[in-house]
Image 1: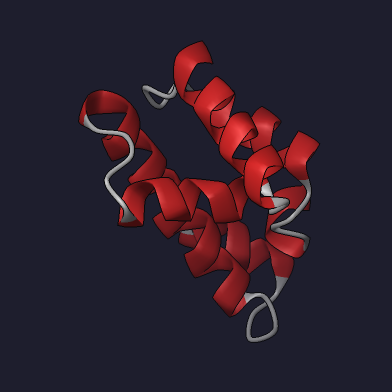
Image 2: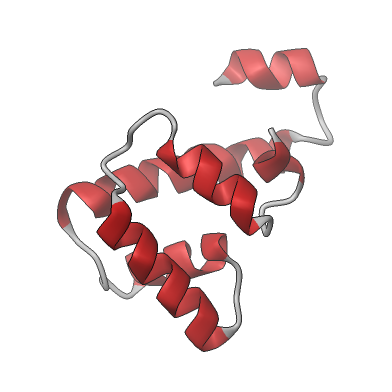
Length: 90
């Protein structure tokens, strides 16, 4: 839930992307961390950049893309609905 309220919370991003398993493994997380450090951006921003610029592909890219769609979708609804409805939506 923390990632929904603050998408730039890197520890929350790591916990959320890893559970349940989404095909985003240690190598993909290392790439995310590296890109985030290189550009001084959050992990969620680095993930979006990696997908937009085709830096990653395959299972990791698909899992990461689905994860971002869910998280960013929930972030966009946070002001419009209650917490219970937010959880039920996904």
